[in-house]
Image (cartoon, rainbow, N blue to C red):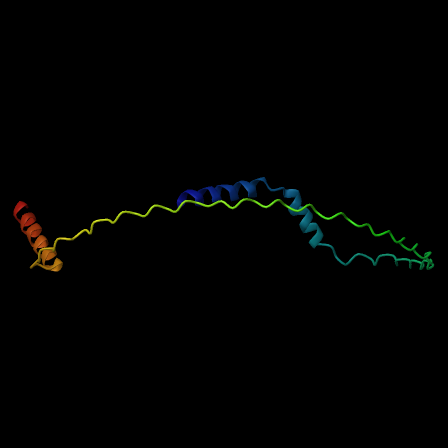
Length: 125
C-alpha cells in the first residue's frame, strides 16, 4: 500500500515544483484590484426585420394507381415421412448392496483422531 502513496507524494511534489510562479503572481494581481471595472458601453438595439410573406406551396400532383400482378404461388412441397425411432432395449436393474452399519459417529471419529494426534505430538516433544 505504501508503493502508490510514495508515488502520489512524489508526483504532487513534482507538480508543485513545476507550477509557474507567474500564474500565482497573476492571480494575486487580480485579487488586488481596487474596484470593479467601469461599466461596459450600452448594447445597441437590433432593429426588427420586416415580415415576409411566402408564396403558397404547389399542390402535390396525384399519381395514377398502378395494379401489381399477383405473386406466383409456391409449389407444394412433398411431405416427407421419417421412419420411426428404434426403441431402446431394456436396461437391467442395478441393485445396490446394503451399506454396513457404522457404530461410530463422525464426531466420534474426529475426537478419536484428535486424541491420537495429541498423544503422538506430546510423546515426540
